[in-house]
Amino acid sequence: MKLSNYPYLVQKEILDNMEISNLFLMSFVSKNMKKLVKSSQVTRFKSIDRIVFDMQNTVHPTIYIQFGSSVHFIILSSLISEDLETDYFQLNVSGKIIAFKCVPLYYVPCRTRFPMVAFNQCDKQSIFESIHNYLLDFFGDSIEYGWIITDCQFFVPQVQHFSLALNFLNTGTDEENMEKLENIVSSSPIMKNIKTSYWRPTGTIKPESKLYRAESISIHQNNPTIPVNLGRFQGNQAFFRCHTCEISDLNEFLNRWKSGEAFQNLEHLDITMNHTDVPLNGVLNAIGVKYIDATKTPPTHTLPKVYFESGHKPNTDPIISHTYVVRKTDNRVASISIQGKALNFGVWNKTEEEFLAMVK
Image (cartoon, rainbow, N blue to C red; front, side, top):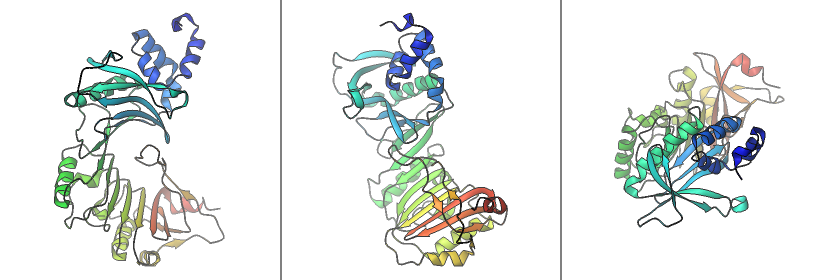
């Protein structure tokens, strides 16, 4: 079948029903084919939330597209240590010759075949940077391009238009982990998201650390102040899982927001305690919350997450609460909810009058 023999509407219908991974391969056929794919798929491409370079797996990094919480793979990859097999073919990707072959994913309907990149470890960075540059030209720069890295597979790509997310795995001693985290964060651009698994160092991250300027953090540690001190966070969304918590720490945090002293960028806070006898409801009285009439329905606070992993919810958990606080400096409102061992705090871009007008 020669696609160019058909009218444009037929061509577009065919392309509309193709996997994006196949559209990517078709773009290499010729300049005219690349132009046709781009022009016919404008609407489809505009609905892309982000393109992710997931570099966490040493042997099999992947590139995929996210539409909301759904994932569409563009490229799979595999580390090689020997000569390429005969079923590989070569493509010029942004000036670099890269070997591909097509492989099936058996959990995908119709066993669709996806392009797989073959790479040697020493070429990994340059190969994926070349692919990034090609995709940037193909899909455009209005899409977010995310790179997920780990402390075990750390490199900052030398490309344009990307956001960096760090999944810190804690592979050494507590002291080694803290030093490694500081070194990675300080040598990188401001990160989109930083995620750590549970650790218990007695020291604290430096107050001036760029970690506190990340847009989103997801932290699991003993309490909200060590080693990452929630009180120094300057970003938008924070998800803390702690083993215990002092009421005084929560009161100080919320009162600093309420006074306008700190956390001007904060949109959402989620603190969950694993093991605690702390009476969290005491927080509400201590910070002077306001109440919506119990007979009325409060508005629901939820936001798109700054960062979310594939397969996870793209939005923050909804907060439907009759309690709220008002920031003194600009009259902005935050809904505050305490349920069981969790405290959720959602900031509205509305004054108290505008907020109360949404109550039903």
